Amino acid sequence: MSPSITTPVSARTYSEQQKSQREVERSQSRHDEDVKEKNRLARVMEHKREFEERVVRRREAEYARLRVEREERLSQVLKARKEERDMKRKMLYYLRTEEERVTRLHEEEAQKRLGKTVFRFIVIFSSALIP
Image (cartoon, rainbow, N blue to C red; front, side):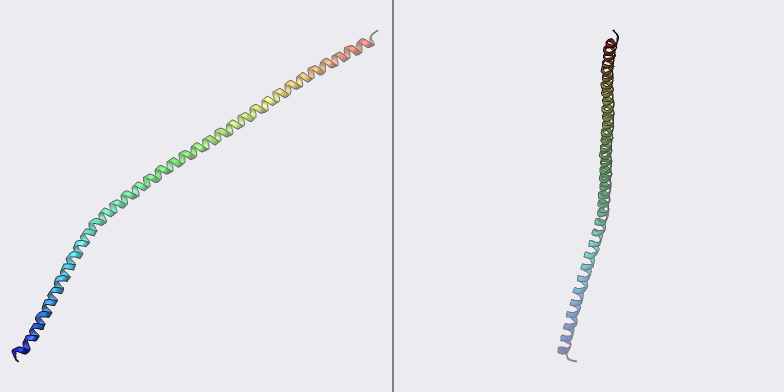
């Protein structure tokens, strides 16, 4: 074989080897970058989990606080309604007893007047009968 024929083949082989070497270097570089990214993401995941746990704890505390506030407000509303019912019941009792007292007074006064009238009638009638 002549050297001129082997040269293009060797040049091609050399070019292919260089190309292959560059591809290996790029693959190694990508692999190294991927490993770095994986490690970074692993650290980030730890922080992410911690952050999520903090958020969940904060939300649970907020929910518990709001639940307690809601229960207190409900308790106050129920207490106010009960006091209002009791006040109405007492007021109705007072009004009913007062009305009964006034009615009884009027009846007693009417009885007294009627009694005086009957007594006068008897006195007048009996004096008319007695000569």
